[in-house]
Length: 262
Image (cartoon, rainbow, N blue to C red; front, side, top):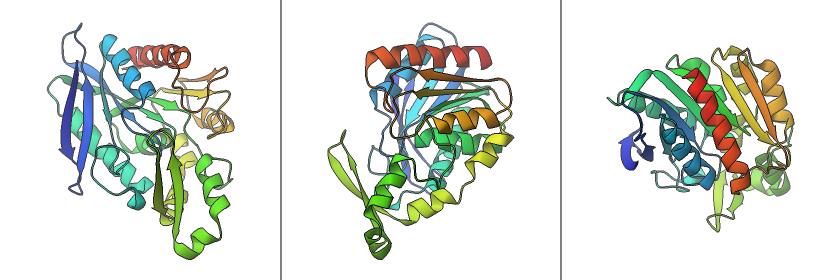
């Protein structure tokens, strides 16, 4: 059963999310918060099907849009920042932990792409988080090998003059103008240092054919993590696994991880 809700973050901005709630188990349920990537939304097929797979396994799932205009939540994408994404996650974890049908002692985070980097960066700061699933998230910045960094480099020096760069979303058929400060803010977060502090079980899933976030990011994160941990490399999978032949087995792997550790 899917249920749409609206909440406010601490900055007063509206966040829209969707619950997938188990129908074959009794509450309180363990719960997983699902975070989308940079240009993504909660409605990406691989996140929507992940939420429903978790619910079918007795785990409540909450997928939401970060506060930017790419999805339904409030905010302008040109003002997007990694720092604000961490604040949004904090607001969502707080909201989820106070739901009567949720077991507040069994909350996990799953994040795709920049959502993966966000959960790796956020998790050590919040003792409520008990397990993680990082889905092709970057573990470091500055090397210029991720899709965002390639885009910014291609638009330099104009971006430095105007203070903006542009990105195109094929899914939404839109081109977005984003402040260059977004990238400087992203660089200010030491995700590798945060990964070293993670004490909860962490699963990493990455496609071997990913051209947006190189596989080396997940290999490095895996090296830095403490046990229990698992790295799954999916042969032939791209960055966004929209095809059933990829998301079905991946969703099952993720659900099994949370079944064990939540």
